[in-house]
Image 1: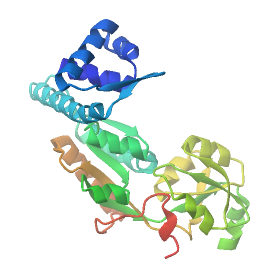
Image 2 (image 1 turned 60 degrees about the vertical axis):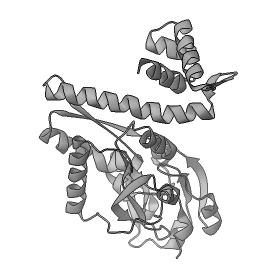
Image 3 (image 1 turned 90 degrees about the vertical axis):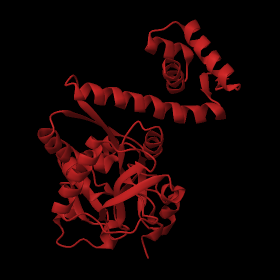
Image 4 (image 1 turned 60 degrees about the horizontal axis):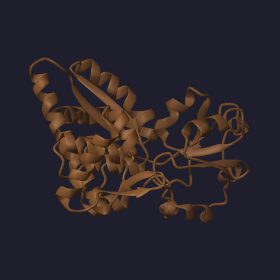
Amino acid sequence: MDAYTRFLAVAEHRSISRAAQALHVSQPALSRTIAQLEEEYRTPLFLRTRHGVELSEAGKTLFLYASRAVRAIDNAREEIHHALGETRLVLRICSGDSWGYGVLPGIIRRFLIDHPDITITLDVLDHESRIRSLDTRSHAIAFAVVSPEMLASEKYDFEPLIRAPYDIYCDENHPLRRKARVSAEDLLGYRWIGHKFEYDYDPASALRTRRVFTLRTNAMLQAIEAMRGSEFLLSTAKTLAGHFGRAGIVPLVEDPESPVFVSGAITAREAHLRGPARKFLSYVRADLKGEGTVGSVAQGPAASEGDTSSSRE
């Protein structure tokens, strides 16, 4: 297991020297470990580049299974020590922005009050990182939209929990807030911010709308700062209203061009969900059911954030 832990460190740091520093071992010792693994598997596990190393195809396969093995052993050690009263259980979850900033914080607070023996780590990740973390078992559950490609792979289970179109947000002093009724034509008179907060949107959507996007960003903080005191408009998840509101960015109207987005809990199909994960999922279901946001939808291809190809069906 020590050899595989070292292998994973080199893969994550993409450098033998940086991995050696992180592991507090000598660089020659780490190089010998990698050489021994490559001899065992009879193939190179890394390719040398100008900037360090990157995984070979064989290395990518080993990374996937070694990650799962190391995580499984860590989980076993954690549960044994927890049973002995020596440590707390850790639940690792990840999400997109709307879940991470808008939905989960309050649920996590209530869950931790009721389960003081559990620690939760929440990482807000991009779409590709969420997939990778589920594959390697770094996180037990991802809360986000799910792409049709993920569902088609049959490697993941998706439980739909929220079904809603986007809202349009603006600065609290925006001129349109003084109007009793905001029309679609009114919205075309202002500049827009395009974003990729949760999932890569369909770039062709820009060809099917008359909205003028003058700023595109993948950083929510940058979008909020750009909107403050300006006349920019932005369309995104309803669940971000509380997070945006603390910066003076408020919902204007429901977006008339938005499809209905479906998001929820994503898990790796072959993964074993431990007790803390199952308990937390029950809290999420109960919370969203109480708010009336749980969607009853089929587990077919779901509209994902930014995929606006169905926005005018």
